[in-house]
Image 1: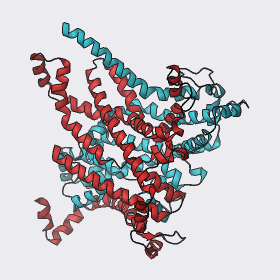
Image 2: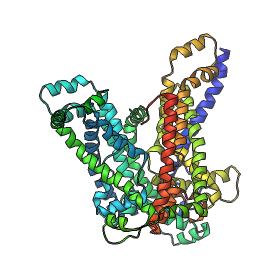
Image 3: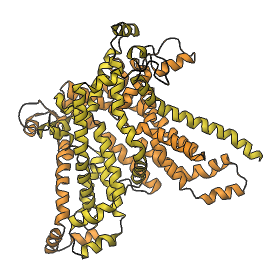
Image 4: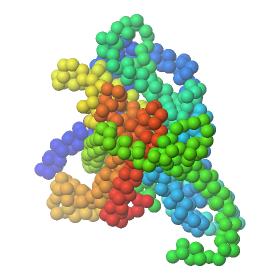
Length: 295
Length: 317
């Protein structure tokens, strides 16, 4: 009993520490959400906010009626919708081939891919190759350079290697060829890992900005995250202004400021991830576990 | 042994094997083409670092191999300048700080979460703590910029606590930059990285705890004498691996959070190569700089993986 009392104090400390962790990781998102829904002029007053002081959806109206922004949202949706199935097809077929133990040159081919996880040509040569392939200002630049992913391939391959060999063998005896075995036997048994990398892929495409930033100049090809990077760059230049200058600038009493636009675009980019996130969490944890037992 | 037996196979048998595996090879074909084009061709392109590459309208390869060979000139230029020391210092200090925070935080979180019996509370904390990992650095940088702005939440909090009177311009002063990077990196990854320790904890034999309880060990003693030794291998492996990626600082957070005012502290090898290559058009110089980084990083990761393999006897390749 005496021991239990001592335990209770530490229990309070544990709950306090973890509550602090909750606040540190969650409040920043909430802060952006509140700022995106607060009146732009009022936000300049600053202060810790738990709730919008002067509620306003003007910035959402402004963002969702901006043609450039809607265009970049469309580009992002399109690359996600096309990119994810392509990634899945590419990664699972490669994983299947490399999971076959008697594959000709299996070890060498495997090494050919794994080596690229540890060494790469880097930024400039890659840029030159992309240019040489005619992918500058081309939608394909969002799909081809990231078509395969060796880390995801290892996750899928490891999973496939864990499937009962007799399952594949009996299909082979029934006269099925490798494409049939892959599509009808192996792939359906890999649903959990395919879901995992499907989500990895979706998040990769949704978040991608770098390829759009350096490989495209056409506004029609700009992705949502790239737009957000440009908004951030503009803000940083503007942040060199003093608060008084900002106040003076907002004295024109525009319903939205560039700052509230930035909050709103950040929110528009974050919301889809937060919405799918609770459903995908367990798959990611599974992916993390699989990753820790690489081969 | 089997591999050796295969190599000695007569050629007609190999032909039969190729025929039998034709669909597998068909699946491999696009992948091999891809890896050659997008991974190995750029590696060959690193030759740019040894020539005086001047971009022309013509074919890249033709231009590359007809460019004047300058040997190690670009490397010498990089090492002899002041920039080398600045970017190396920034790279090492920010990853060193990240390593310290990013190593301790996930272990602490896992140990704390393991003590929590309330499932809903545990779930809520875990869900929140993994969230920053899933958003991109673009979103994270926007959030961090807002929190640290002159009228942002952190300045407001510090003022409310009476710690400061005037707002601190965190992102405009170089002296804060390393800390901002290290804490941002930790904020983003600590929850997710705690998963690995939670799984290590759950793998510790429960009988050991029962035995310790019978022996009258308090919870603290159990943690110190049973739990921590039980997850020690995982801790050591994770530490070794993070040392291996010291040079791989990442590009996004430095590029997005840094600005011209903090350049002396926010410039790491990757952002430096980007600025010289893409923005200033000094392709050969930028290639040499990133080749230097790739080689050193590769040696570091390779050595460290070897050590990790010896320690844990687990494959990482």
